[in-house]
Amino acid sequence: MAKEENVKEEKVEEEKVANSNNKKNLMIVVVLILILAIIIFSTILICDNNKTVEQKNNNYENEIKQSQEKALLTFKENFNVGKEMSYNELITKLVNTNEIKENTKITLKINDKEIKEGEKYVFNEIGKYKIDVKLEYKNEESVIINEKNSEINIMADSEKPVISGISDKTITVGDKIDLKAGITAEDSVDGKLDVTIEGEVDNKKAGKYDIKVIATDKSGNKQEETFTVTVKEKKKTETANKTTNTTATNKTTNTNKNTKTNTTKNKEQTKKTFTTSELIAAGKSAKSSYRTQINAVFSYTNKYREKAGVEKLKLDETLSTAACMRAVEMAYSGNFSHTRPDGKGNCFTVLSEVGANYGYVGENIAMGQASAKAATEWWRNSSGHYQNMISTNFKKIGVGAFKYNGKYYWVQLFTD
Image (cartoon, rainbow, N blue to C red):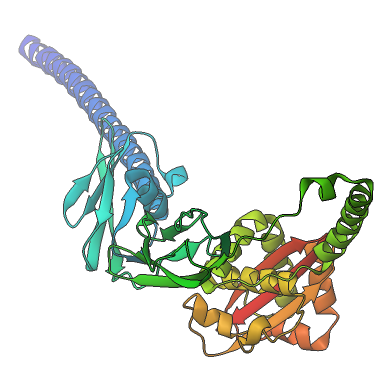
């Protein structure tokens, strides 16, 4: 009996030890599971955080790329040989700097030669020039680069210089004359040019002498104008006694009064003719002086086209020069007409004088309206003029404005 009881007690002890070990093992398993869960959860958090950071970086890089793409402008242009452009002028045409971010470097190359800020480039050979612009954004995390290619086509300079200051002159036998006095020449590419004179004046002999003025630009384009110098015989002078008597003095006073009256009349009726070069120069001057009025007419015209559902016109500088030439010549000639003064033909011959080409062409003219709005409204209320303003055949417009003797002259030239 005693042995049986000892055996039972030993079994109970063994069971207690086994249960204790099982509890310990279970606790270890639970702890391991918790540790594993913590590791897994931490890993997930780290991965999510990395993904979030990566996503933010990707979004920022995409934002930079999009701003760079918006900043890079498409630029294709034709210039005459000899055109000079500065770094800043080129960048203005090639990059919208408002769109680029800070820390962005701009690299400009022309035919693989880098042009740096402050430098100028002269397109002195005929042909196509490759323009490369690179935007490089750099920070601690990344470098983002975007590039765009553009093109400039340099053509032969075919435009003739403009000679100004040509007018007939009259001198008296024995007087000296400077044949170049007041005469200037300018070229759109080469700038101011020297003029040469062909012909001589014999100031000892009365008569008429034809003088030729020549200006030649670096491309060989030559412009010639002529004027006449008249040499008159000296008039015999009256005696001093005759000019100082009372009667002569009274006559002189009356003459001055009459002269003043006639001068005022003549001012209103003065007619002036121009050489082609003078008229072109006068047109360019008017275009500069009346830029506000020109832009206003252009704006009002496009508003009418917009209301009519028609594509807007583009303001063309060459056509505007021609339109201003028409306004000037009508003002000085008193010939308010679609026919040009001095037998030059119809109004559209002015376009050949400035080198403008066209298929479809039209002209509107107005006189006396005090503002661009009034002139444009006057055309709007005339069916023929309005049809010109909204015609789908026309894509470009030139606007002319000129004020003479207190009266405005307005011109619109349309081409396709």
